[in-house]
Image 1 (cartoon, rainbow, N blue to C red):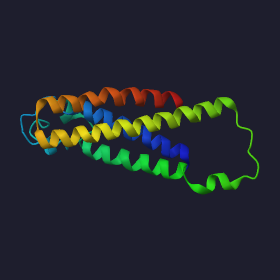
Image 2 (image 1 turned 180 degrees about the vertical axis):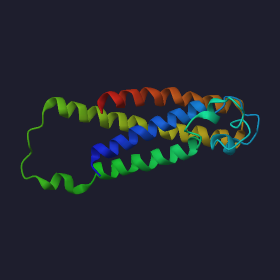
Image 3 (image 1 turned 90 degrees about the horizontal axis):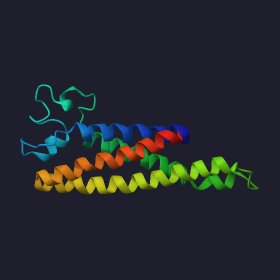
Image 4 (image 1 turned 90 degrees about the vertical axis):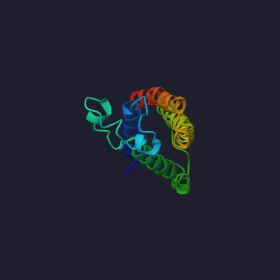
Length: 155
């Protein structure tokens, strides 16, 4: 799989996670944070709720795991040590392409930081099951949406 395909996987996984975060009901009546985040609780099953009708019913925990895996795979390939050993002399690289690659890498680093914050918020909500923690977690959706939109413009 090429780096571009891996980057597309990162993009789609981030987009699905963002959609899953939005779909999580804003109120947690079940008092079971893990089930709430996995879209397996009574809050999600309510008739007419967005979460019950969306394709992202797997919940945000599944999508978070997928994104971590695809982001890890992308970075592993990007940092592969033999990339620099394949050329004797540096090739000319179009400045526009170089700038675009730099932007993509910057977004991926920012995405990694955003995911770390999101994971902390997930753990905090799991531990407390407080509405305030759930709202902070759902706020992560907006940050993720900005990154997904920027990535879409670069792909």
